[in-house]
Length: 232
Image (cartoon, rainbow, N blue to C red; front, side, top):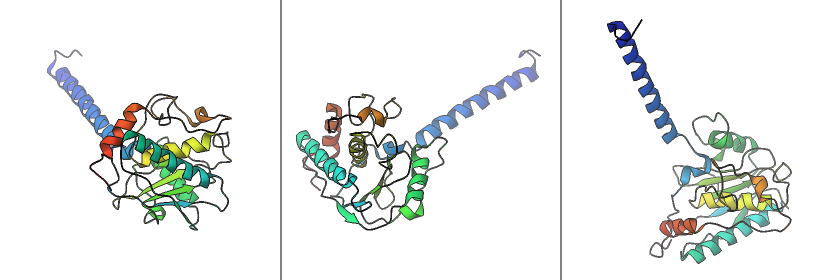
């Protein structure tokens, strides 16, 4: 039956209309869907956040958190911003492995569900709480919750690729970068490279301990978010 027939034209119009609706829904879904650590892209802290690390006693990554904080404070200073991250404190809270896995799946997992922070990760002790886990999940920096808190979940260091030299150091620094408002770039030589670019944590592997650099655009973005006139 050709589309010159009234019934054919009607069917064709329905198909076109359905296609337009499907496209609109896809755009809306793409706009609203969480994009992992990108969820707080461009959103600065309006105060100096408290930072709390939840980890097993003696976890060597505790020192890497301190290193990441010092790194970002140097970047902020070089950018001309007065904003600084404070030293982290420690917490004896248990590591909430299952809740971290659920949140990771919601943010960056394949076939992720609509984002909702697990109840166990609400009302954590820090404005920025960093949990150094032992299980396997995609490390993440969770979106700001209604109270302005962020949780960073770091994959177990005995699980590949965090068991490669220099990788855990950069994964932690990368997620702290998200926690202060930076998104991803597409340059594998830079710290904040990530989805949708084909940058993966094994690219951080090195026998020389070092944190990858940030781009000039990222320094400018930090200065826009944390200008000299906006001292916390």
